[in-house]
Amino acid sequence: MDERLRRWRLVLGGGEADVTGFPLGGGDLGMDGALAAVYEGRDGGLGASAPRVARWLGDIRTYFPATVVQVMQRDAIERLDLTRLLLEPEMLEAVEPDVHLVGTLIALNRVMPDRARESARAVIRSVVAELERRLAQKTRAAVAGALDRAARTRRPRRVADIDWNRTVHANLKNYLPERNTVVPERLVGHARRQRAVQREVVLCVDQSGSMASSVVYASVFGAVLASTRSLKTSLVVFDTAVADLTDRLRDPVELLFGTQLGGGTDINRAVAYCQGLLTRPADSVFILISDLYEGGVRQEMLRRVSAMTRAGVQVVVLLALSDEGAPSYDRENAAALAALGVPAFACTPDAFPGLMAAAIERRDIGRWAERNVSAPAGRGGP
Image 1 (cartoon, helix red, strand yellow):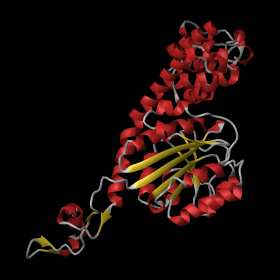
Image 2 (tube, one colour; image 1 turned 90 degrees about the horizontal axis):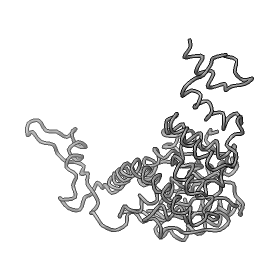
Image 3 (tube, rainbow, N blue to C red; image 1 turned 30 degrees about the vertical axis):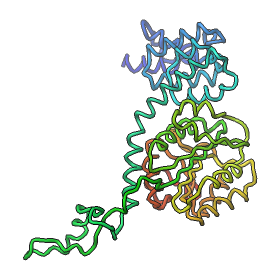
Image 4 (cartoon, rainbow, N blue to C red; image 1 turned 90 degrees about the vertical axis):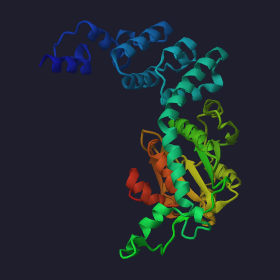
């Protein structure tokens, strides 16, 4: 019972909110104070004192696991307006790096003094390295497998191109027991292997403020895809203007510093630019990552997407590429895209490699989404 009261006391906080009457002691007092500074505003909160914030950051890392620390940091930044303190190098060295913090630092990039810039780079680099460790191998394996399957043919040109294991499996019904052999009525193999590019991939990413986590993940995935020689990968970011950051894909940290969160949105202009990058429509995958709030010419944007699909481009629209689900988005535009055969849905980073494989193999993306993520918008989605 005492443990339950203790937990309720920490949840409810002190003062009038405390109906447990349970006294705290030892480390619990420190934990309670760390929580109160953000969620109750007692003891003057954290105020604007850098030393006080630094001590608080140290306290929460002592009392709570990293996942909770990240949530508390984010809440402190939002509730107590601590954004400007993140421009101090000592603050950046004290925080727990995570995707949301990277998004905040990207937004502050244009006002960040030089003395804070290197600390910010270190924070961003540590997050990017962790994301690459978690996602890169899975993505490369999924893409390689999809390219391999997409290149299979029933008419291999040479004996060396025959996939004997799959050929035997496909012809087991033709087994002749008296001869102890399988008659290969249908050959399964690979098209002649080439070093040339097999697919063109364009990631087109909305830089509006709500898309911060998506920008981070898209940058990491863009760098991973660019390292695959069979893909020609481009990354384009946009607000009311369009910036092609393809030349920065070798270094996702530099790529992220080239983005600029916030501002308006002109999806039509971005789609128009990306159309010019697709030189082989039937072998191209175009991924638009946006909440679809269009500040440009809506009908023209829809016309361009329709033209892409008719030309053979595999078009994918993601409302978000993050662990947070779909943000607020333009439902009318999502429904209009679904009517064109292009469903819009949110995708988690862990599901993205599977999505890339489905797109490369030209599978039905709507069906893939229904099986692997929440229902696509415009098809019974939220």
